[in-house]
Length: 470
Image (cartoon, rainbow, N blue to C red):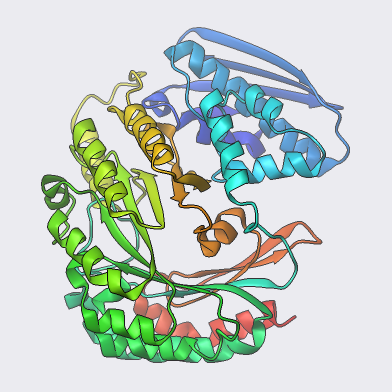
């Protein structure tokens, strides 16, 4: 529990607390004073006290709040490092897009390294950010009118234990599919006059390939009038156990250029533990099946899955590299509200000792997993081209997309850097209008559950017409 005399800082400070395992059980008191750019922070907990004074040149109220948050978060991070004896790979940075901070520093004519160093970011991660910016060269573009199109298909063969999306096994949602596809078609038809310069199309899930070939064709047919410039076109095919040649034929026939095969792990034991209905052999089979079509392929892995050892994860990295996909994304396990694995862990915690204590920070070999993936992917000729972070990530690490030369996924760069509009259709889809000249973003979120989405699709169309048609 954290208390502060500055309520506008509370959420930012709690984001720092959550980075340290067990720190959310501490009684932390915070006093803040800030006048004319002079910030004074005092933290007390466990009989310890920490003070920090910072001076900044403040030009306006917005900048005052931003710098106050920066000063307070850094002071709290240093205090918790003192209490735990542990440092974190991203230091006091809590935002999900470190590269956005780097770009902002560069736009003001400064190298981002000194700022990152001040915030406690490790040298390895500063170098990683620099590599990502280089990997985005030729793809990253901030220009009014650029737009990406996202289509949500929230259907899966089964729900993985770490998944927090509003999805359910297809046998429980099959009755909604016809109405859902009709609603998507209406949204896509209404979206056509709203798009100026389409950079990419991304059909995601869920697991889009859980639909039949005929149902998938209905979606791609509705997309066809919008994709007039031959831009990048991705279908997140998903799990290998739902791959068929008929579905791959549909993708080829409608001009899809990239598919995703989400292996997550090449350990059959791990796949069973997380609720997957496929084996590692099925992953190899899916790659073999897709090979004649010439698609660029993205492959996902997750570090820190249930009970997976360092050796098993290393084998998965090696296996993914051996298949030579265009992109390999290494995710760090992130447990959000709604994930069955998170709820199970909370239940076990509630059954145990409830006394506030500072648990020794441990990421279960996560650092070694991340280090191994970086080393092996670099040696295999891959370069990092996007990264992002989430709350509740194991070991406070990150997700990194790695690409072969000239194979970067445009959609991933645009979305992670919020460099273009994102017109999103379907349930649980978030549309974003990027106002570059005003430095702000407006969002429209669709309902997460399918029945509510179907009820509100007409109002969603009207809202998007108002936002993107202005």
